[in-house]
Amino acid sequence: MDEQALKVRYAGAMRLLAELLRAQELFIGDIVLVDQDRINPKALGYIYGFADCALQYGRMDIGSKFGLGLMMSLLVEFDDSNADRLWEYLKAPGDAKSLLEGVSLGFDDYATWAESGGTGAPPLRWAKCF
Image 1 (cartoon, rainbow, N blue to C red):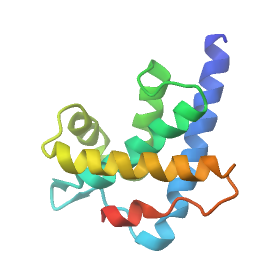
Image 2 (image 1 turned 45 degrees about the vertical axis):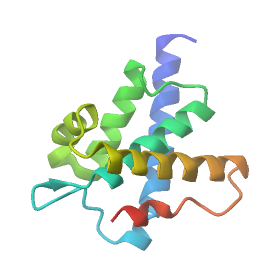
Image 3 (image 1 turned 90 degrees about the horizontal axis):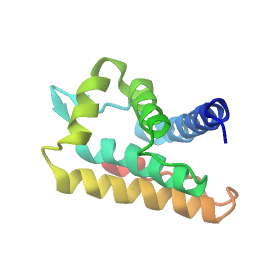
Image 4 (image 1 turned 120 degrees about the horizontal axis):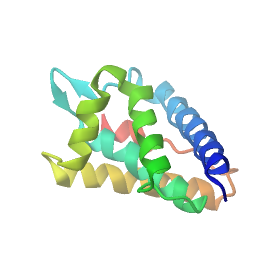
């Protein structure tokens, strides 16, 4: 697949992921990834795990330049003013255990939904991270 086609696929995935995550906002209220200068590692991990699982289902790679761009776009989508800080936290987490709990929860949420063919209950456990 050429580079332009890859860009289009990752951009489409980003829009879908943002939409699925935004739908959960109804049960969360305001999505706050950084509160009083403290990062919520579990909520951040959820985004990463959710995106990673989705990309794996689509035979894409979160570690590729396009996958990393998708992840940064999601951080901007949910906390533009702290996106760089959240990115750095992903690379060197202060609370790796909580981050990985969120990753696992997000990964499992997307996998369960995807295995239903997208017709099962929508992913809704991001609220457990707040």
